Image (cartoon, rainbow, N blue to C red; front, side, top):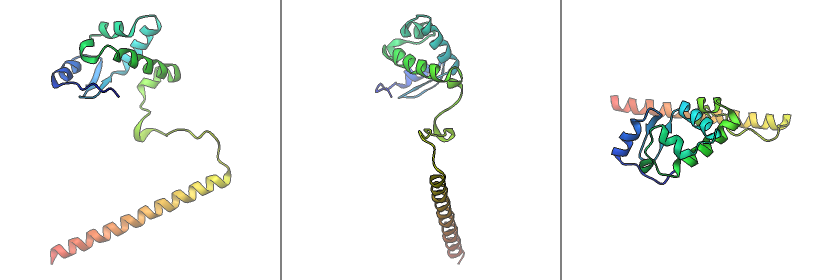
Length: 143
C-alpha cells in the first residue's frame, strides 16, 4: 500500500475520472475495464505513465511511480488469470484461501473434520449460554 495520503480535493478530482470506482485518502480502486485495457496497451509497448496520462490521470496527484507499480501488479494478474482475474473477487470471505500443496490422507481428513465438528459444537454451546444470559437480563429488567 502506498504511503501517499490524498487530500479531500485530490480524492474528488480522482473520483471524477471515469476509470476509478472509488478513491480514499490511502487508496484508489480502478475499474476492471481500465485495468484490462491498460495491460493490453502496456503489452503493445506503451509506458505506464503514458497509459495513465491518456486516460485522464494527473501524475502530480497519484505520483509518478504509481502507474508502473500498478501495471506490474495487473500484468501479473492478467498473465495468471486472464481478463477474468479482474472481474472476479479473489479476496475476503468469498476466497477459498491458499490451496493446500499436498493432498490429505483419509486419517488427516478425519482429524480435520473432527476438529471442525468440535469447534462448531463449542460455538453452539457458547451461543446457547449467551441466549440464556440475555433471557436472565430481560427477566431482571421486568421485575
